[in-house]
Image (cartoon, rainbow over all chains, first blue to last red; front, side):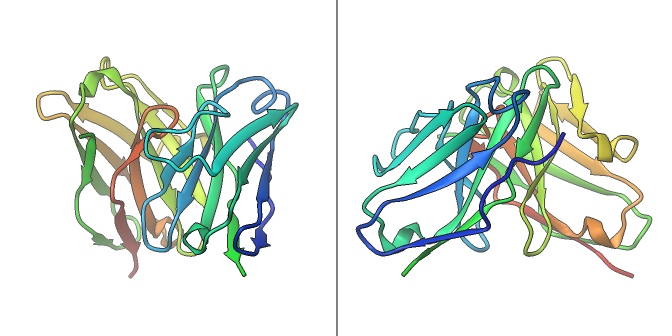
Amino acid sequence: QSALTQPASVSGSPGQSITISCTGTSSDVGRYNLVSWYQQYPGKAPKIIIYGVTNRPSGVSNRFSGSKSGITASLTISGLQGEDEADYYCSTYTTSMSVVVFGGGTKLTVL
Amino acid sequence: QVQLVQSGAEVKKPGASVKVSCEASGYSFTNNYIHWVRQAPGQGLEWMGWINPNNGFTNYEQKFQGRLTLTRDTSTSTAYMDLSSLRSDDTAVYYCARSHSADYWGQGTLVTVSS
């Protein structure tokens, strides 16, 4: 199972919006609504911020939103803040193979 | 509240095995799969496999077949990850996570493989 494709880095200024893409195939991202997104600070465990493509866990800021079109899922962060500077990973669970696939991760820099 | 608490850091020699534990609390242990994910220094997340605590069924990423064993003890709500024939490139932080969406994560266990 190949990894999902994410840009290595994105950047934005405080207050702006940015979008991180996560491209898979018709067998994973395109087939299931099971994409999750995680935020990870250096030296810390990942934290889920989106599950089921669009759902935000309780306590996660509504500045984070998820979507999907075809084989590409996206994470949008609006009203960028300095605290958003972190690594972001997407993943999906494929029920056909019963495996999880992660993206390579995207480093977000807030300018 | 849901918590996954992992065992402490390990240093192992090449060829040895390591066993990392993940104690769950705050929810029904048998109702959620436990996944194991690792992260090599400076690298991304790598999925290793899952165990269904209800029946012990497992599924492993192909690259770990034959070296990885996931088990659980329902009496203590603890999941275990056993990785054998360790190599230097197995040096990583190993995480357990709950459910297919990995909604809760352990704090991570650093495993260092060095001669």
